[in-house]
Image (tube, rainbow, N blue to C red; front, side, top):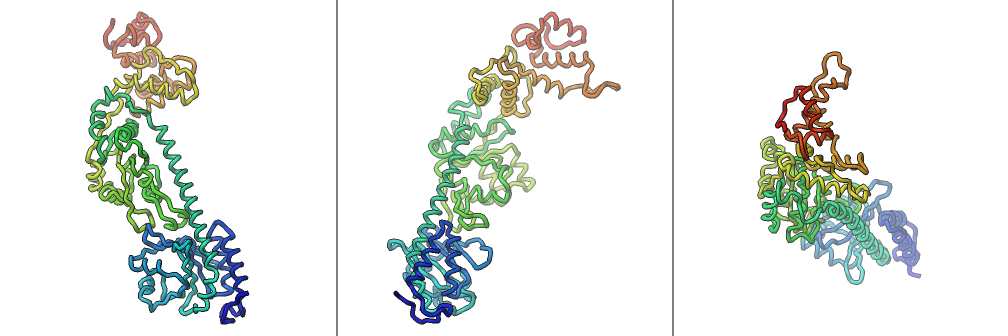
Length: 520
């Protein structure tokens, strides 16, 4: 057996059996995949041999040029967030070059340089360098409150357990890497599924008609790499245009990551967009890539950019200027090769005037604006859009044969104002398919909605929620005539839409005193 020299130095327990010490340390530090659990068990054992209040396990992160603390345990206390300690090149060389246990000495110039970061003036630190196959991967730090707590005998005893601590650190790093890549795969899988579902193919409906000017601009800008700003009312199809720009660009084989800036809580926006380092804040148990990093080599689509909070606007401006991000809790800029497409339904110029949006960010975004017209200004696209949604929604609802559209129904849709734009049309088609399975799609609910919007006030004494029959008939016929553009007879005429003979309709119009449009 090997026994420690200087009996009485180790907690007053006399001579130390190093073989037993090695065995007990190994069993505790290797007792759990959760390194903090294993480190706490080890701390509870080591306090019998060392002056000890805290126990740290650090890695030397060459990518960050910093010491990254992956575990930090104390006796009977809640753990603070784990810090990242940046190092100068000189300090990095000094720390990485240490091969044997050493006591941090405030009189050493290198230790003094670290002192503001590790509060060496108030504490005693004993450091055990850890290596795997000649690679210096990190170190274990024993800390005791107060100065002058450690001796060379303590360092010598700690060195006898270097192997299990090195293995534990290597296992912790491997476990961390597995967890990180599981998180990455889950995130990327979710985003890829969403984007695959949202991709509608190479053809934009209306590209040769109502969206002709838009698609001309898309063709001009898609092959380039500059920022694009999409403007238009809610529901006009800005995401479809963003998809199209991406899939027409040289970046089409890269990721297309969509971010709804208005849907992320302000407290999480920085972490979601830019990612965070492990230990950056309470609950940040693993490193996380932000959406800008996930978009590397592809395109990031920032929808509802006008909802971005002020602090996030500052960080986005830096991304646009320098093409680099910095994770929350990080110290090293990370270059990102991305294209930015932003979209909003708000007037950013007015927001700048009201100090709600940064002027310099607006200038950066407004390099190539594309305004997407509302559906009411491109009614020639309504038939093609309606047919597309009938097929799409039938598939989603598990209906093998899409229901037919009734004669005259498309004319009815073209006469409506569509305040909700393409999204409202999509929802209407889905509702009609559900309500009229097995029959033709008439879109009569649209007429009811219009009638409700223009209904005359009730006369005194009328029951709530009712109209006089002649008023209701007059209103309904007038609405249909408006949709049919005054046409009574023939395909798409008011008589066909109402399902009655043209002569019957004319008679009712005469009775009700309706003089509307052309009479033929």
